[in-house]
Amino acid sequence: QVQLVESGGGSVQAGGSLRLSCTAIQFTYATMGWFRQAPGNEREGVASLAVDGSTTYADSAKGRFTVSKDYVKNTLYLQMDSLKPEDTAMYYCAGRSSVVRGPPALDVWHYENWGQGTQVTVSS
Image (cartoon, rainbow, N blue to C red):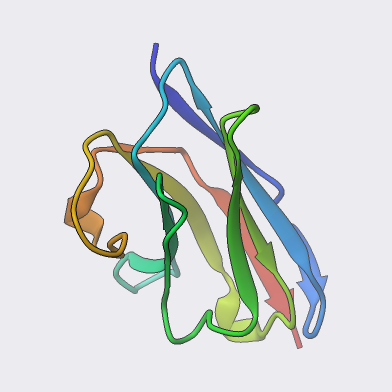
């Protein structure tokens, strides 16, 4: 069964760090991404990584978050530093199986498989 399993969420104070992990079970995706959704808000893209190593970051993540992948473990990571209360959300991992030209997308519709999410809470 194809699955995306996230972990690493938690509660931290503003300025702290967390590293999220997402392991793809029984499938290797061409593009993977991290998204988040706060209560009352739409799901938004945070960072994505394509098979060629190219990345895309949302403006809110640039300079603070880093997306990477361990290809042996088939696991995607999101290192989040200098966290802010506005980063509080449920974070989801997503995967797309087909290769697409250009930088990896941050659009929700671009991805076909999703994990269950991991909660990140940042207190001031």
